[in-house]
Length: 409
Figure 1 (tube, rainbow, N blue to C red):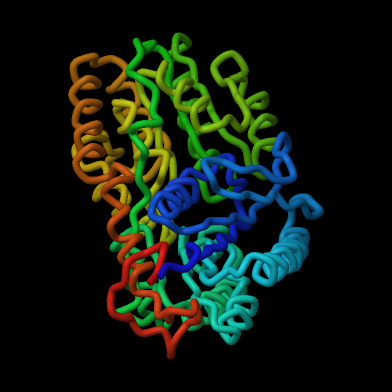
Figure 2 (cartoon, one colour):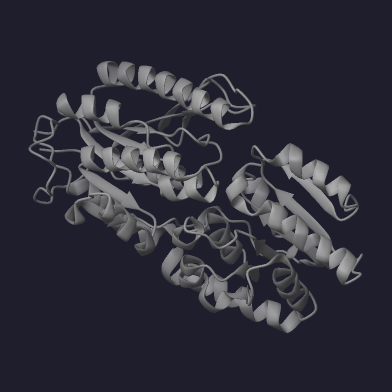
């Protein structure tokens, strides 16, 4: 005799489900594997209050946007935690949720996770980014980075299973007390079936896709563009910057101050399909994330998407970027925008090299970094959750004997 499918509740604080391809991929995989999936996430402009997407029930939650500045961000974090926690508790009571899948950043839901774990729910901590290193990259100082580290430690302690996006992120998690037997690498991956077909590119067009927050290297990218325009005298090159973030207003002002209005176009945030179609026109794509403790251990989704589109990449030589992109990218020999500008120009002026790097990148995605390559690890992590036949978590969270996901006997 079978029971109804187990219900998974996914919480996301920092990205709408509409634009978060990792969460979309995870939710779709779990849904196809027999789980009943619900998602709570921020409500962006244009998002409905709720929607059913490929069988996934998504509720878009709104809280006050308090502007820039550290105090405003901390207050906004508090508002978001309260809002999402209230919706999560309601769903747990109404929908017979058995697994709570909490995505970071921020690492502020450990209290909710601990409460739900005490009531017998299994907890998955999906560490998209290492929050203490992210704080350090923002230049917030050791005190806030230390507090973030304590929050991460608490989140790791309460989780039955911890998902990380790369091998590079494992040492940081272990240093904060993570159980090595409960860490699973579930890489970011690209759903190749959703990517647009190859399109003719414009050799004068350079693309960027991603967030536009202080850690994302957009300040370095504008300096790179300035070098290309003023130091190299290239007025024939255009840059398409796709995305949004807290830094966007300042970036627009900086473009005007540098006299780059004719070279730079900000498209704003686009849906994944629209963003990929826009990038398909570009001859080169750029990953400007500067080297630091955060970026060295982070897997950049944009680079995977660039490679899936067959685009050559100009980037700084970050540890995880080199692991993922391999010989599909041209790496700046020095950690400065002038060096990155040289990589962009080298690729733009060499059609054969662009084609070679683009083909290598596509092969790397197909062989190792398509989402289908990450699905087995995700499902294995879920099969190891210590749930009993009644859907309650057993014990301290050590791996349980493997069981079939979704429907349970």
